[in-house]
Length: 93
Image 1 (cartoon, rainbow, N blue to C red):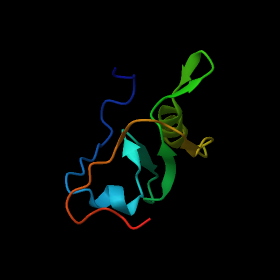
Image 2: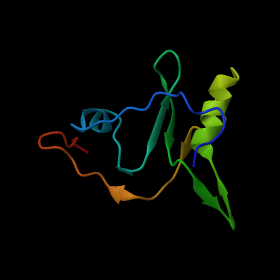
Image 3: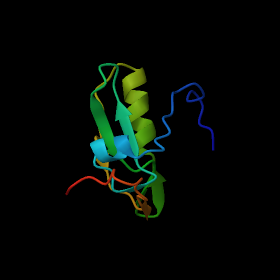
């Protein structure tokens, strides 16, 4: 689903798993949002269940950045498939 105002944001495909290893990713899909200084400001789920409804913490983090506000929620637990690591890229845990 396309959300208004998010049409032109860059999206990185990480085919060799190098960035997933660097950010210590654990599942897919998992969002990593960086600010204009390339500082990680959010890591976690794109959407999260809260009771009977859904929240969109990754979207909220991007909106905070767009409006020049501090990111209010910096992590959110998510669920997904485990990472299928490219050969030689799995991080030491």
